[in-house]
Image (cartoon, rainbow, N blue to C red; front, side, top):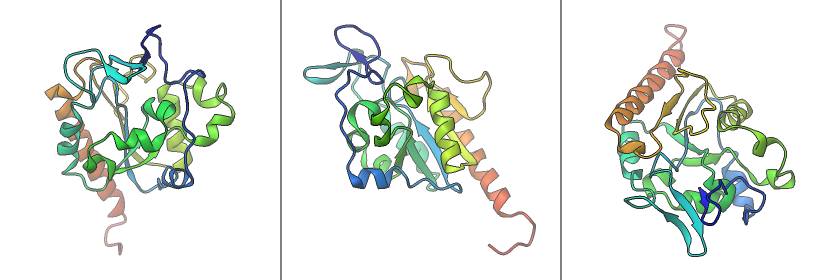
Length: 210
């Protein structure tokens, strides 16, 4: 997300108008458990082209299509994986707050979205920690905090912060996002493998009572 005047990234800057989270939001963003299967979700470059600007009229997509245009594709893919929860890694949370960023998603995705990598306590130190981390580091911090063992990230990674060939990242083209059928297939296969690995761990040792 960029500022309409400068064209520079705006969502993680200290000049953004931030919305403090409510007590309910603080509770929701802490609902990840170590046993969860989690998809960390970016918006820009994934659910629509990476050409979103913050203007006086609100958020504006300056590319063909509309905001969240590929969200229905994600909902359809996730329909086969009911156990997967969503944690928002998008910079929209840093700018709009968790509640408003989640509210733009279709209901099927909202119902899965229980967490974000950014939370309200980070308002007290906007130039430390989170704001100095790459997207990869932000997600790893959330993974460590929740002690997750089953997770993936869906991101266009425009800064190239992820290690090369990291199987936990499903990388999107910044302009095509989830419209790319190859990305759709990769995401589905990674989710299926994550679910299988989870079942395999649950079934070990053989004959154990669940």
